[in-house]
Length: 64
Image (cartoon, rainbow, N blue to C red; front, side):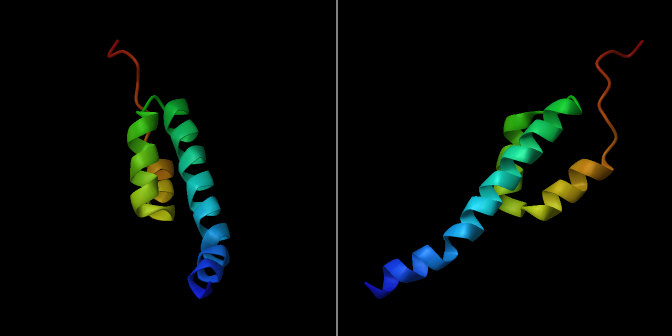
């Protein structure tokens, strides 16, 4: 049962990381980027992906 308490202690960490990934996906879509790609990047890199997403310029829809 000790391993179950360890998982319960880490549960808020996973919830926060997953929530950040969802927020990043929505932010990416608002900047005309792939929400799914940024969701996966956020799961892997977390706050670093957020920083990169915020610093990158918004993608334009058309060239002219």
